[in-house]
Image 1 (cartoon, one colour):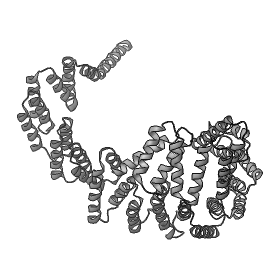
Image 2 (cartoon, helix red, strand yellow):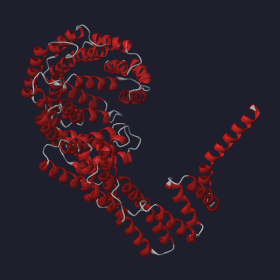
Image 3 (tube, one colour):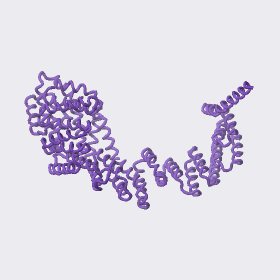
Image 4 (tube, one colour):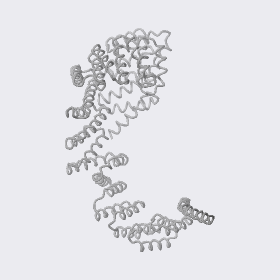
Length: 599
């Protein structure tokens, strides 16, 4: 008895397994173009699972592929008689007629499908999908529109209509329906942003803005539209435009402090200092109860500092006013681990812009003594303090601090930065061999910026030591380089002039010109700086400074002189003629950005 039961169970299992394999086998036949074999299996499956429309559709498809139009028509008519509510069968019938080159009769079936459409959401979606699968987008759109006339507005239908109009190139109508969908379901915002980024042109974005403005006026209480418009502005890097939209929402309903703060950070990162400052000041004006108050205050000061540092020559009155604001901040919030970054920024302002080296050093010593200071902030403070000792000429104090950070962060980019500062210090001091040893290690740094700086200085030392029997010329150049770092610009220029007199037609000539260009720039003599950089490009195109000079010229034309066409021309020259340069990738990126801006 047990044996009989075992045999029955085994037979049932095998039958179930064969049944499960049939759809896979049918699909395999269909994919291989064996339509007669596929038709036999799909016919069986359609009878076995009458509610599964896919099997029936595939069966009809196989009949059409084999030219068996009569059987296909007979089966479609029978299915329509038994299930008149399945109006998508009219589309299948139309497909069959179209296959027989009867487009007018096919169109009649399509119209019949829409005419007989029941007031049922799923029937609407199925019919629209049937039209869409045949690329009959206009008919699919009409199906959805009729469906909404019968059943009322529907978020998913609006979204699908948007897709259909986009595929037809009717982008204004697509935008209208996408926004209708967004209004009913704000969670679609990210999906729609992706669609707009991928499929819509700049002209379409102008249409999008127009429609959003119109909706904001008609529905001022709907927060979805200003948020979406803010995203459009953000995409265009119009940070003030984005800020206006989010600010209006914040004033009306509140709760947008972190959104505004993140927008400010983005503007700051993109060097739109005016917009960033407006944003951070808006947050600080809200008072200490605002959760982003301290950070917004700190970044507002940092932004003002960058605006001061970005000027040549430095506006001393603006720098003094900013120093006072930093000091007021530290008086209000005290010197703590959270405000240490402010003290670091103040120290740099005092040292490099106001020549208050001793005040800056004293402040940094206080930062180092803050209880609970994070190791990273401590390391950054020590590097800054080491730089200031170097400015004062106290080389051994500087190298001690750099070495401490190098040891504490041996496998970290911060440690690599400290090691580079130490290598550069010994280069300034004329100890080129020791500097070269450290630079060779740093060339493999995980920090691309440090690795590039190390590589540039290493090549510079190697090239100029290899050509001379003595290091006197390189030593004079390094001394001038240090004087520039110490902001002793007139002394640096005299040192460079002495080098040129003592060593005429030297391999360092292009380097001397490059350093002179930096001196002119620091003095605010923009034109003289550009002329000097241009001389390097024209006269020393094969030298190691040519690509640096070309990139800096392009940057000055773009950011200081606002001559975008000239900047674009220079960026293009750089990545075309200096393709191996470390600046080539960035130059190409900026060229494209300027070209898109023009378009």
